[in-house]
Length: 495
Image (cartoon, rainbow, N blue to C red; front, side, top):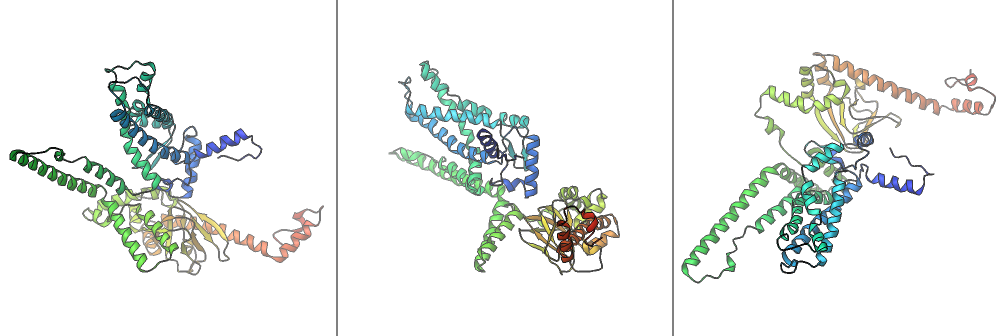
């Protein structure tokens, strides 16, 4: 980590400030699309210092700033190169440098800098939600994607030919066409614009659809017709053009509905939730918490799991369920190294439950019904006196204290500190599973016993600190400079 040195020179402070901008930042709009908790954020920072210190993190503020800047640079490059080639460039007088040539040169210099940065900045794999920091993979991915178009459009060949006055009508076309290779960057422009403005994918798809529809006209309105045969032929062609427009519109709408079906379902669900909150006049904080819950729960994609699994056999459903929960099984220590058949039975009883920040999982005096396995997030455990005793994080097991005692009520309080993704298992199902294999129940009891011992020890220390006899003894000991504390105070009583 970067440790601030108050005695550092101004040069060191500037370098440290620059280095902080290329580190992963929680202010990046996509940070929680790839990292689900602050614990994962800390692990990613440690991984960056171990693996990728020489590259720029793709979730850093510098990455966000540079990609936002390149949106306008790429758009200016496309517009300027098209304007220069189509309007400004005179095929009969090609040896003069225009103002547009200077503007395009400045843009191309920025694009050359962008090529260097692209070789030194990590990238995100949206499908697998991975953050790649390996320099060889970064270079290989960039060379196989946009390196050649970027290089062709960024090298100012046409401007150099104007400087040396070596242009002729034969070599005019190719140098002026090279900047048009920047047009392939339209895909990254849309992605970066979506990241910058946090808009939905449907808006980008609508822009693409509108651009396609604008270029699908017949163009016969510029011709004047005088003969009947020309009128009939042109009318027939315009009719075919209109039918082609309708067919293209239906085809693209069908494609859009197929590709973005889950996103549209999510928007429909969110619209119903918004109307429900508006009808019942929910307060603003509660509305914000509901939106955060739906956004985290569905990740902007909604589908009916029962429909997807309804046509499968029971064995195939168990295999899919086991594969889905495999990450949880690998993360939670008490679920590791269990027999596959027994683990699949356990996964069938797990129930998903998501807690928002400051949500109460259970309170002192509640009936003990479930034990919780934490997938991502952080839960805080409070004692009866309201003391924050410990934290449960990714892979921990919470709520199993009732398995060690005869009491059916909770003796502690559990609160979520951030958005926490948990799976709960009822005590009834746990006892049913213990008849098949006692390993899981024994592990939960052992883990709970360790936690309970820590909480009990902490409460003993608090009671010891709050005892007035102990305070008086500590004061008497502190007033004797030559005395040894071990002779006067042992466990709070005079010796």
